[in-house]
Image (cartoon, helix red, strand yellow):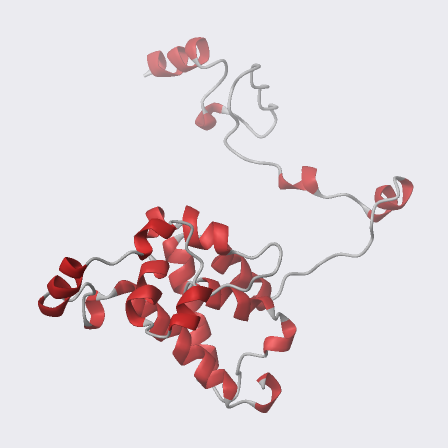
Length: 210
């Protein structure tokens, strides 16, 4: 029975947890060893030190709206789905309805997740439209081009691959009998657009969100 304890002392630089007594200090870990716990207090700076080094004393306490924004920005499928589901519930709740004035970026991010972007500097068209297209298997540029018939609106659709705009006569006849888009729940872009449209519709009934 003593052999395992001796082995731990020799090969793991110390005693077993069972052998550490209250009166005996726990041996220090050698350089390069990984501790089993993390000291979160090392990130806490006292008010005295903040004033001494001229650090800001204005603390930003994140609220639920900030968490929704971060989830929508993350690009992680589970986080985005969770945030959109929460927005759907809050938009349909009369007592705790979502108040857009607390964080207007929610509308911008919801529209960006549907492939609708503004033309201002720093819009999300590059991130949502290009970088995440392959990771999420959603091509909203193709979606809007497939369903929008108005030429003026089609010109507003941001598409960096302009070569796809040319439509051949063979493609027109083929699409007549084989529609390019799937229908119902199989249309993943259409389902996401429907989710966001329902959220915006529900929020429009609240006077504070108009």
